[in-house]
Length: 123
Image 1 (spheres, one colour):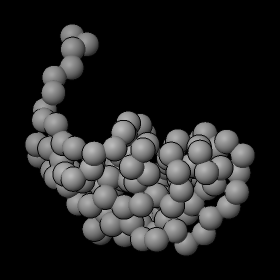
Image 2 (cartoon, rainbow, N blue to C red):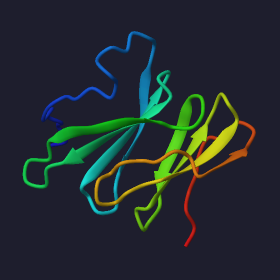
Image 3 (cartoon, rainbow, N blue to C red):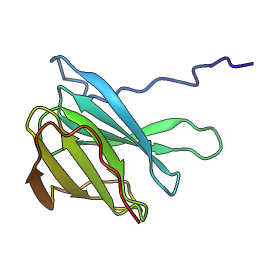
Image 4 (tube, rainbow, N blue to C red):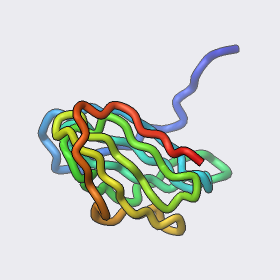
């Protein structure tokens, strides 16, 4: 019918966050077990586990994205890396990703890029 129904809502921010924020990009891990959402303002990536039967999300953690204002991010096809483009710091960051837990590590590499807006993995 083309209609949408809210299953449930989850916050992408820490409970004590009081600053301005917008959630932007949403990606599903290749294994389908995790969902990632970027926070522009909090400068982080929120990670959720996804229940396969119900589709409901449960918070895993919130990780710094390695720059300011995550414009876009993408998960590698093997599920072991998350690349993030930071609009306001003009940088890219490569964060290790544990496919078993969904947890992100500190940026393994960063690079300067003027006004990055989109990233894609090429095979």
